[in-house]
Image (cartoon, rainbow, N blue to C red; front, side, top):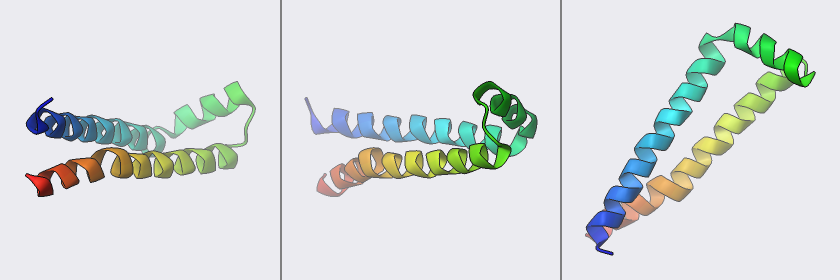
Amino acid sequence: MPMETVRHFFAWCTVINFAILLLWCALTFLAPGLIRIVTKWFGLTEEKLRSLNYAGITFYELLIILLNLAPYLALRIMA
C-alpha cells in the first residue's frame, strides 16, 4: 500500500474521530436534560455520570491523539 494512501487514511480517521468527540462534547454540555434521562436509565447520580462522561471524553481524546494524529504527523514528517 502506498504511503500516500496510509497518510490519507490517518488524516480522515483523525477528522472523523474529532467530529465524534465534538458531538459528544456538544451533547454533554448543551443538553443537560439528556443527562437526567441517562441517569434514570442506569441508576447513577448526576455527578457520577458527569465525572464518567468527562473521563470518557478525556480518554477518547487521548486515544485520538496517540492512535490517529501521532501516526499521521509521523508520516507527514517522513514524506
